[in-house]
Amino acid sequence: MASPTHVGGGVNVDDLPHVDQPMIQMLTPEGKRVPGGEYERFAEDLDDEMLRLMYRDMTLSRRVDAEGTALQRQGQLGLWVPLLGQEAAQIGLGRATRPQDFIFPSYREHGLALTRGVPPETLLGIFRGVSHSGWDPQAHNLHPYAIVIGAQTLHAVGYAMGVQLDGDIATGDQDRDTATIACFGDGATSQGEVSEALTFAGTYNAPVLFFLQNNQWAISEPTTVQTKAPLHTRGVGFGVPGVRVDGNDVIATYAVARAGLDSIRAGNGPLLLEAYTYRMGAHTTADDPTKYRSDAETENWRAKDPIRRLRRYLLESEMADQEFFDGVDAEADELAAGLRKACVEMPDPDPQEMFSHVYSHEHALVSEESAWHAQYEASFAEAEAR
Image (tube, rainbow, N blue to C red; front, side):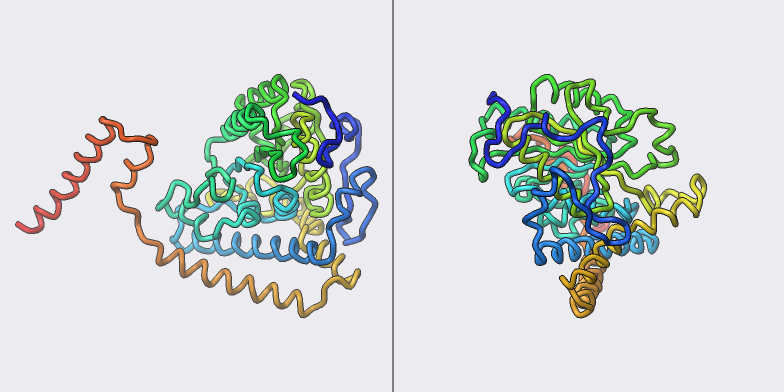
């Protein structure tokens, strides 16, 4: 294992602020740009074009999310998991990654999936019940959604340890050095799997970023009930330093994620990044948040809307005009219309496909079960013919 250096633009995690540092912010809720301290240099490549791209990403993500909710309410999806309010956290992280980085999401990372090139309609397939994933994980370096809370953190650490054994960190080659990202929420930190993942990551110095989106509520339980310690400090006892960033600030999230990922790729070990954000909608479409939180709380966070603050900054800095915003809105409407059409016309899968990917090679028992199921299905056609 290489010693901590500044290989390939990385930074030593010891140089990063951790437990006793305040939340990192570069864009206030009013859309004012403020200095980001030692993270400022990681935001330098966010030129006008990149900032407009991230605004577009967030707007399209929100539109996809709204359409997913509407489709569920109309009976086209069995369930939908909204991301409303968390767009900056996901887009900031997504745009800070490199193509070779591998991401293990939970079930709310629709915006992150967009940055990895996953077509939005494939996300709907999971919640429509016609697909277990919908996309090729190797084509997008994005693992399928994990419904079991916290399980993906162990998968991510295992993958990261494999990257480490392959020697794909600390080489100085920006196209080779690889970071692994585990995405999870505040509620998942109470799961044993997350503690186990932190244990292995710290012990083996695994190249993994634990990306914690603290949206304040684990379904109906607030963070204050879940833990007395700030969540970004959770990893310290495992040897995993932590940083807290304003998760509604896409610029700060990008910069801090970029710094952490560079450090991880340089061989400096794991990092826990807490994106402090808020779930403005329901936990899922099966949830009613009015039963456990006040409208005043939600309205207070609505004033910190991540898309609104970036829009104000772009306007006041003259990086974008009304024509640009109108164009993005029109693109979002077109995307939503195409998404709805794709969802309604989505074909049911061939039942035989359930046997196709159980093992990487032919397995006698699976082949036997597949043959029995094919015969069982054929019996219905034979009965109708009689």
